[in-house]
Length: 338
Image 1 (cartoon, rainbow, N blue to C red):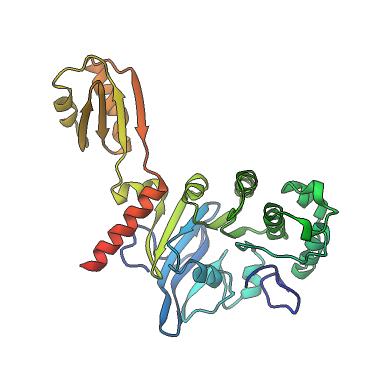
Image 2 (cartoon, helix red, strand yellow):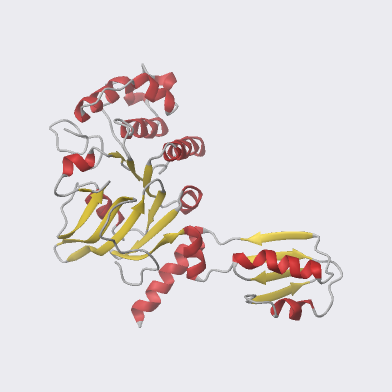
């Protein structure tokens, strides 16, 4: 029995594709993809919680899955884990069909729910041994606890743990069996900055060791810091999926170059405006703000220097994932009103 399968014991945890910007479909081959979600649909009565969702998670990436409250994130995650059955569609993990070969697929997955729970009267060593028996593997619990920063607490009862320590124990539990894929649901939710940093560092270490991380979080700064690509879901439909840089570019959120240039001449704005791909030039005293794609920045600076302009400071304004997220949602709402 794996940790995902039903048990008489207390469980560890609680139980779109319109307008997609890029690579939301699936291909005939699952090679190179850790998770492939294809035309997934799930309803609860009259509620269409998941509506024809397809996306792929590249092997070896940290992939973010984000959306507003009630958007269908949790339902999709439970479908990926095989904790729910779909009305239609498929999910494969490492090329294995989750719904046809659930046990084999789940053997590749480590799962950290938003709020993991464990027996209060067990030590963390006993807890990890318990879940290792469920998964049918041998482990060194002391080494695993040290690895996640709990080496000092091996003899304490889990019931005395802080929320951050419990979350780290959840990470250690997910690591049992050395899975290829990790599914993390709000891994730093309600944690203070110290514990959040530890969890993020462990996620990066797991990824650095070759694991694929599928991460859902409301903390968009965390997603931006950790993830290579993201998928955005709203109203049960996938509305965008791409790399963070490409999503920012495609959403139209401005990238700005801020230049400090003493003794500016009157013609500098016209000079810049005539350069290819420069979208807007704004002047405030001896400061110029140039809106353009990222790839134009080097050309803009070199053109100014070659023309004799003196640049004393260069700064950039990069849109945050929050900026992009809001813009994508607004674009989707505008398209829905047409």
